Image 1 (cartoon, each protein chain N blue to C red):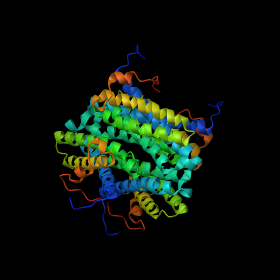
Image 2: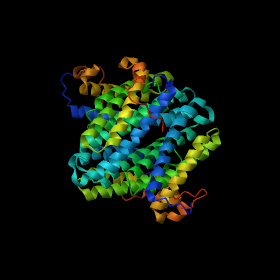
Image 3: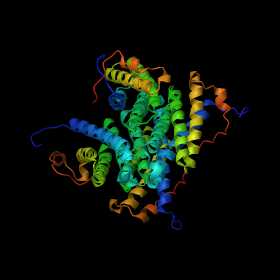
Image 4: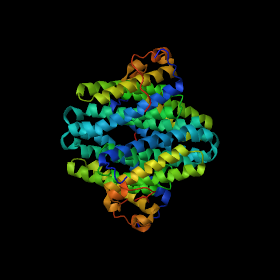
Amino acid sequence: MEHTVINVDQRMQQCIDECLDCYQVCFSEAMSHCLPTGGKHVEARHLGLMLNCAELCRTAAEFMMSNSALHATVCGACAEVCEACARSCEQVGGMDTCVQQCRRCARSCREMAGSGASAHGFSGSQAQNSDAPMKAPM
Amino acid sequence: MEHTVINVDQRMQQCIDECLDCYQVCFSEAMSHCLPTGGKHVEARHLGLMLNCAELCRTAAEFMMSNSALHATVCGACAEVCEACARSCEQVGGMDTCVQQCRRCARSCREMAGSGASAHGFSGSQAQNSDAPMKAPM
Amino acid sequence: MEHTVINVDQRMQQCIDECLDCYQVCFSEAMSHCLPTGGKHVEARHLGLMLNCAELCRTAAEFMMSNSALHATVCGACAEVCEACARSCEQVGGMDTCVQQCRRCARSCREMAGSGASAHGFSGSQAQNSDAPMKAPM
Amino acid sequence: MEHTVINVDQRMQQCIDECLDCYQVCFSEAMSHCLPTGGKHVEARHLGLMLNCAELCRTAAEFMMSNSALHATVCGACAEVCEACARSCEQVGGMDTCVQQCRRCARSCREMAGSGASAHGFSGSQAQNSDAPMKAPM
């Protein structure tokens, strides 16, 4: 990543894509995988978290699509909720697609939170040195 | 406020109500007041902020309606965005209903952010004794 | 009702209120009643319908808050979904609040669908002669 | 198209993709193209229609992601609103991406409305003989 220059607009578009993918994966898995499977998959805390996560991801995407100066605030909250959703999906088991998408979205949102508000403890260089490869936009 | 005992469930229900009212006021004013009025009212930053604020208020309400343990995180972000929306409405002028509802929602969301996550630096008693605008938690 | 003249704007505001109430009741009952109760309450068809109904009610409200000429189309679809949700809640049992709110919303949306698009088979007079009292706006 | 067999699940997934693309294009163009451009682009009827269209597309996608038996009803309404949005974008001018995506989404939603509810006047064969090529899923 050191030699790759990614400008803010490209990174924001990537984050929009990750958020909208995460909205779709979380909502779709909640409805077409968790509900029919039952058991742990429909425990209130897990299913509620998946639906809440979907909605916050979509809201974060709307802030970025609106070029809002406040996107960092919402992306920071979104990163936290996506991490919690990934952990819940790991505990339930058999939800690898959702775990992975939530982690990708959390990473991308943390970058946005950092670039937009360095007071949150993220620096641009830390974000760019993220230890995992960045996903190409969909 | 000192002699009034409000339990957490009542305060959360109040915050849900404030958030859903703020969603309705912001969306409705954006569409039926700002768009027909034009001028400053349809500047991208102002109209975008009103629509983004509406959506985040609704999302915060959904976290609380889902009894999510993560509601404090989203309410903290919501309080910050509502404050920014109130200021933008003040600058545009002639939007008192929206200014007042955004301020009420911001205050209620700050209380939720504080009561749900004392690590953020708010205690329940501070939140309950709030008689002046508190600083956004995030 | 015979002697009461309700103009279109009042009736539209009532329908907005019914739709937003129905959004809140359906979403809230799905998350805080159905999910914790389990059994029939979390069957995919029932819980999915409640969440879908919530979202369509909110969308119909947004068309009306935007003074859209297409509100009748969306209200027509919303009435059909609300009726289906009311029936599903009756079959599951113990969900009277949701049954009643879905029925009120369906009735109000049918009126809007009729007044906006008589080709749908609803006439204004039929709508006004609805057999149940109209609810005051919240 | 005559010799191509596309099963319902593939066609529904295509419609979900078209609806979510249309949500993103309409919302994003409204916020980052129409609002900054001003003039005709921010007339209440046009901008309101774009935002309403975005929201109904997303709601239709949620019905399909939930495998709802009522998706045909919502897709029928969505097709009508997408057509109106395409026409509004044509009249405003300079919005070809939005015109094209709304038309693709309208066509896909009409197919879904027809396959799910033949009483709406669409037959499966008419839908499959649509005069334009189908877009591959994203």
